[in-house]
Amino acid sequence: MERSQFFSAQAGRFIEMPRHATARFGIGDVVRHRMFDFRGVIFDIDPVFSNSEEWYEAIPQDMRPRRDQPFYHLLAENEDSSYVAYVSQQNLLPDSDGGPVDHPNVPELFDEFRNGRYRMRRSLTH
Image (cartoon, rainbow, N blue to C red):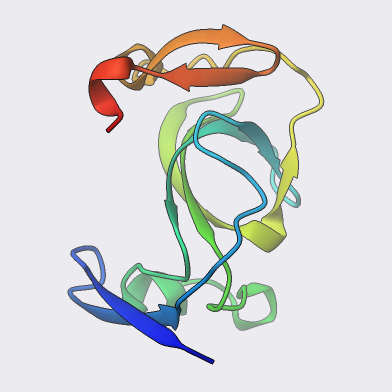
C-alpha cells in the first residue's frame, strides 16, 4: 500500500498514513459521540491519529480507539460547557437532533446552518 506522511504540530512529529484515506464525515457536519453525551460540529479532519502520545495514553486502554482511522476536531457542547474535542471516527454518529450547535466559536468558522450542517465561511476555504 502506498504511504505518505505529514507533520503534525500537535504530535510534534511526522505522521505516516495511507496515501488515500476515507472520512465518513465532512467539515460542517454535526455529529454525536457514540459513548459520551456530547455533540459538535466538525471543523477539521486528520486522516489518522495525529495528536500527542500523552493524549493517546491518557485514554483507558479498553476504550482506546485505533490510530489508523480519521480523527475529527469538533466544536463540542454538552449540557454544562462548550469545548474543543478530538474524536475517532469509530466513536462518532450522525446527530439525530438536527439542530445547530451552541458553541461560541461557531460564528468564527461557519456562515450558515442549513439541512443539518454548517457551511464554512467563504474566507476560510481555498
